[in-house]
Image (cartoon, rainbow, N blue to C red; front, side, top):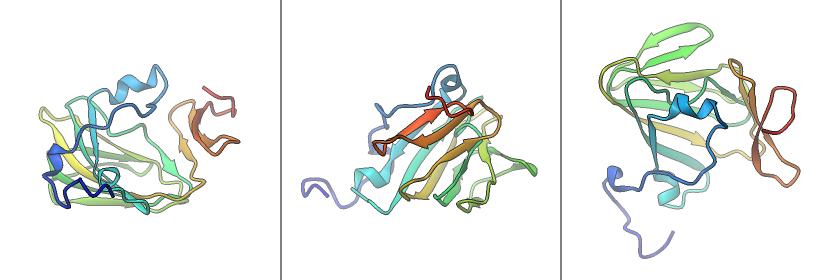
Length: 159
């Protein structure tokens, strides 16, 4: 950690994450109302990540997805998102959480169908070699020969 950075900070003051490659067009527009603050990155955490995420009305946390090697947990702070999985939909409220075990194939995402922002914590580990399946879209995330995470079509061709 940079010794000039504070040891503690108001989470909402961590800069919004920008510059990371997002989903390819036209899929990107489905999460256009999502704003992430990478709290784990801000503090230089290497073993797990924590995002403070705000989802505007009508937007999604992500495309519905499942990780091969990364565990994931979401904790709702404000608002009422709808959790969507293959098993159906569940309305979540502040104080509720949901977890997704790596390799389970349980694809998931949150939709904000309400009229106010949803705020949540996203917590996940950072396992190397993680790939992602997006069952509703012609999309996957793979590892390039150079070891970078890249988006691919379901047939394996790069975006």
